[in-house]
Length: 69
Image (cartoon, rainbow, N blue to C red; front, side, top):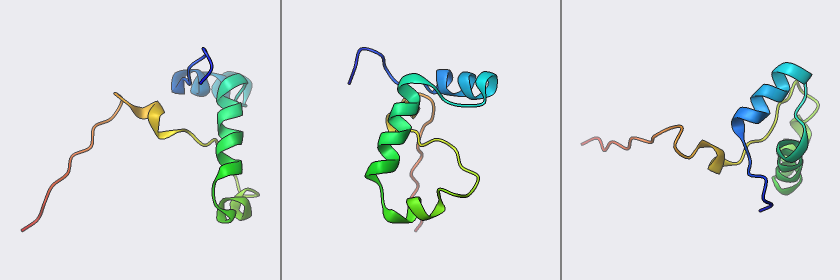
């Protein structure tokens, strides 16, 4: 990964200010869209967004797993 790390905060800021993602975050989203299933390509024409790597959420959310009995 380049020196520039992915920043969810920077993605949101750019989308709000410029109405589009820029730089590294845009490159990551484009790369992810090329590497996932054909179903995503079919839906691409719909109002879209940006793909975000799961690692961008580290520390931002927790996962609670419960087991029902």
